Amino acid sequence: MRNTDSIIRRAEKQCASRGTRLTKKRKYVLTGLLESDKALSAYELIAVCKEKYDEDIPAMSVYRILDFLQGEHLVHKLNTASKYASCANIEDDKVGCYSQFLICRSCSKVKEVGLKPSMMAELQATVQDASFKLVNPQLEMNCLCDDCA
Ligand SMILES: [Zn+2]
Ligand SMILES: [Zn+2]
Image 1 (cartoon, rainbow, N blue to C red):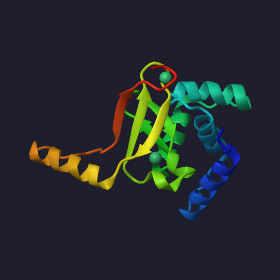
Image 2 (image 1 turned 180 degrees about the vertical axis):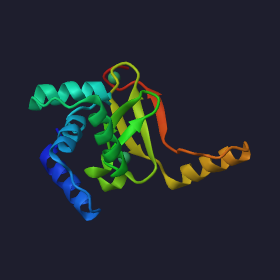
Image 3 (image 1 turned 90 degrees about the vertical axis):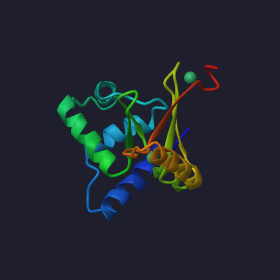
């Protein structure tokens, strides 16, 4: 079980060092993602905030909060699923900057793992050889977790 409080404190410090602030609602949304081992959609996050904090956050605000959290590198958007997951780097700096997401196709559990720079370089070269330019290096893998396999 993750220690959400200490992760939130790290996130607060990280924001402060960048001159931004983790407001109450931003904290609610981030906590919702931290306490879920699955990626959540904006609408699922609205339901979590309502249930856990009795706070009605309009969809527009949730999207703005998610944009902010992405800008602060606290949250990632999974493009294939249109859902969001908290960044594993907040609690563990070792994940590194090239993240790859393992997504269970059965239960939607998500794990962020670091990609070795050498692998990233190889991938870049393959893309370039094909006369393409890599725009977003985020990898999302279709998987089955141990519980579902
Ligand atoms: Zn991350
Ligand atoms: Zn699963």
